[in-house]
Every structure is written in structure tokens, then in C-alpha cells.
Image (cartoon, rainbow, N blue to C red; front, side, top):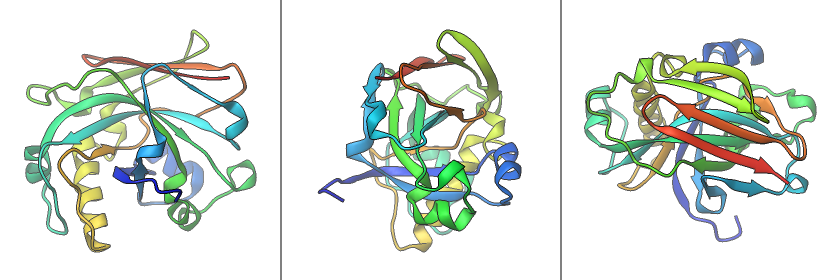
Length: 210
């Protein structure tokens, strides 16, 4: 894909409300590419998107390799260097997002870009289920959520991703980034929009569309 390198993985449909919206009952995984990795405050060209939406997510960064199948939540947690606030820009090649789980899987979970916050935070002492987030669009609060929206606990998502990609003959590597699915409703994008997600204890992350 244009010489891009895989730098991690992602999960979609980890939120029960999103599963119900699309009529699916299990997550879907995909890979993250270095070409889609952005820094906090990134400006994305609106003309390069199709029907983009923005999601607030928790990102894990791995300290050591994690190879499934057979990964447990305890092993997954032991492999984490820290967590980061993230915004994912998802995009869809199907009109009006009329997709099935198989379509999303074939499109690498509709991945487009991932915007990571500035800090890496230890997971020790944090109950990831209760880690809250406030999503703003153009300065107005549009939704709130918490880590429990991602399969009950984001570490369960990391475990699932490691085991799922393991069945494909791949493993997660030290330094990989794994995003764990939206904690809030995905927000549609228009030219000029600015999105900010502010996480409890992690700070905020912002993306705009020009």
C-alpha cells in the first residue's frame, strides 16, 4: 500500500451500541499504517476523505511482543508500556455507511488516520473501565463515554486483538500501537470541523479538517 508499514492494530465494533447500529455481534480487527499516524492537533484535508467520522478511543503502546492465540488479559496488561488518548478518523467506501461486518473487515476496519495525544501514561492504578472521555465538536460537547464501552474493559480488546491477529499468523510487536474502539458515538465530519476528546487523567487530543 504505497510502501506503508504496519505499526499496530485496531479494533472496531467493540461498543455494544455501535454493534446494534450496524447489526453485528462481534468485533472486527484491522491494521494501523505509519502513513495514517498523526500527531495531536493534526490538520486533515477534507478533500482526501470520503464519508469520514471521528471516534474517541484509548490507545495502548506495547512494551514487549504479544503473540496469540492464547493471550490472557493478565498477559496483555503485562505487555503494555502505557496508554495514550486518541482520535480515530474512520472512513467508508460504501455509500451512507451501509456496511456489514464482513465489509468492514475487508476494508481493514475502515481505518484512515489515528491522531495520538502527546503523553504516554502508565496503566498502573487506573481502572480502565472507568476512564472517562468528553467529546467536543467545534467547541460543543456532543457525547461522553468511558472505557467500559470497549468490550467492558479496553484490556479485553487488546487481548482479543492479539488473539485474532495471532490466528492470522501475525503477532503484535514491542512499540506497536493498538486502538481499542470508540467509547462514544462516531461523529460525522464536515469541512472546517474541529474535534477534541478530553480524557480523565490523560489530557486531550485534537484534529481538524481543512
